[in-house]
Amino acid sequence: MLGRFKIFLLALVITFSVSMEVQAANKVWVNDLRKLFLANAASIYELNIRTFNAQDKNGNGIIEFDIDGEESGNFINAIDRLDELKDAKINTIHVMPITPVGKTKALGTAGSLYAASGFDSLNPQLKSSKSNLSIEEQARKFIDEAHKRNIRVIIDLPACGSYDLYLEQPELFVKDKNGQPVVPADWTDVRLLNGGTEEKINRDVYNLYKGFVDMVMGLGADGIRADVAPLKPAKFWQELIEYSRKKDPQFMWLAETSDSWTTPVSQYGVYTQYNKLLEAGFDGYYGSWFELKNWKTANELYKHVKFNKELSAKFKEPKSVIGSFTTHDEMSPVLVNGNKYSEMITWLNATLPLNAYFVDGFQTGDNYIYFWANKKAPKTYTDDEYYFVHRGKIDIFNFSRRPGAASYDLLANYETAVRFKTAMQALIANGKFTTLKSTNPKVFAYAMSHNEKTVLVFGNLNFSDISEAKIKVPKFNEKIMTIPIKIKSIPVFKDNRFNVKLEPGETVVLLVEGFEL
Image (cartoon, rainbow, N blue to C red; front, side, top):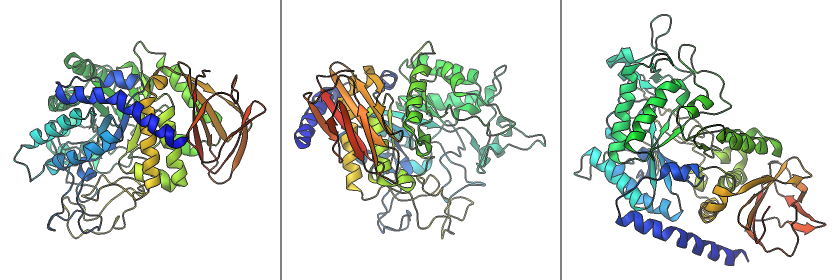
């Protein structure tokens, strides 16, 4: 039954997407990212151009430019992987910063992507030496090629400036009581930009960011992800977002912020809460899905779904959220709770009312453990002589290997889930989310229903032991057609309940035809 359904599902996806792909390839690209995002229909893939298609010929994890054939990721070789994303039904990419990086007081031998030394030009590290095109033309070609594949592009806007930028323009930065530039939190390679206050925006920093907006819109990008958005006042963002929307009403803005963030990164800077940022015009935010690893009961998951649904209704314009279960700032899921945790994240992304979100390497189980991490480097391109990395997180500091591992089971699971989300787009966008009664608090059970179609999802939040539960699905009976989508332990329907015995961290997904809650 499962094999026949996969064929059926693939046919649905192909029918749904072929016309869109033909349209994108043959016509002038028309941005529709806001519409897609606000319908919870975006499947977003985060990538670092510098590593996305890096060529590490000797397999030592580091790109050594003096070895024949070794090449770091760049705008041109990144194009070679776009078909992979298209085939997996990824329809949006989040590109980590493409701005120049600082080399002074740096972290890592290439410099952090988020230590921006300028905001209106491109990082020369991302230029291919194999192309005669200018770096701007290369970046535009990459975005154009994404659009031809019906893939939208979000560009990351760094929150802070590098020390190099501070030396050039100290007036752009927040100072402490001693007149020194502020180091936010423990981000020692950057200094805090001064966006001003709600009463008075700092026009110098505003114009810096306005230049960034002009640049990425000129390249053809479809949206911006604002790194640590709370570090600027709401009025700052409101004016900038309105400026972009006059150029393109569908230009999407995603705020890196969470309802669980409460502590300012510095006593000297402003801190704008998530709700104020959404009021200012951001289309969405990160939510607190990354807390899944700490949730012990299903109620904690249900509460966050309810919170986000209610939050969206509080604003004049619709709002949405990404599935921030794992991002480049989060530990690799396979290090947290193994492959089952990655599978759970994948299917929650596919079936909850949110926009799916994945980091490059997640789909094959990369643990982002680099054997050379924090060791002295034989060569550096900054003033840091060590391969600085965050353990278990994708490398953003060095010219390192392409992300990825060898878990083909996880890859197949990810591809099936993203295709399923694509096929169920109307259900995810318009469906009703219903929590189901489970006799075990560690077993979550919910349904998404729309137009005589229902998706049932059961999962075990206990990653160390088997969990059994009885789950009540109102008005369901054994005669209703039920198709297994993601299943290992087979639920048994008896006495008007599903009886489940789930392995540690196991997730079950069922599609019920002709049935609606």
